[in-house]
Image 1 (cartoon, helix red, strand yellow):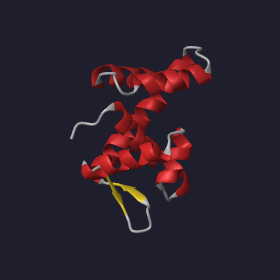
Image 2: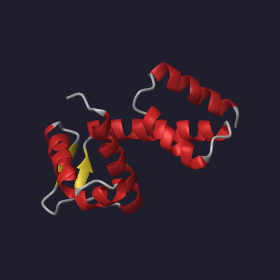
Image 3: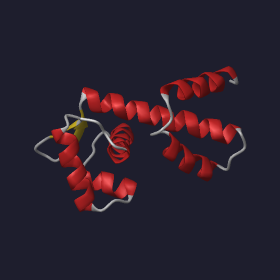
Length: 122
């Protein structure tokens, strides 16, 4: 199943919340992203059917290996792109918003070049 940008956003949110809280429920994702509960419920169903997450009997959401790989990739892109933009003098809020848009569309080649550049400046 090919994920769209929204699916990647949900996986990233689940990843961030699970690292922060250790436990993620649909309501947590809704609050974190500012999405409606019905939207999150629909997305959870799609992600579950796609093999990206599992949901246990208590409603806790867990990333599968495939879901974790996607979430970690998107999270890394967001972090690296945000830092890159901030280092160029972009306002932090603008950098975070722009990185969120860029992380889904940037090619692997361009991302790796930016990542390498960032690392060389440390």
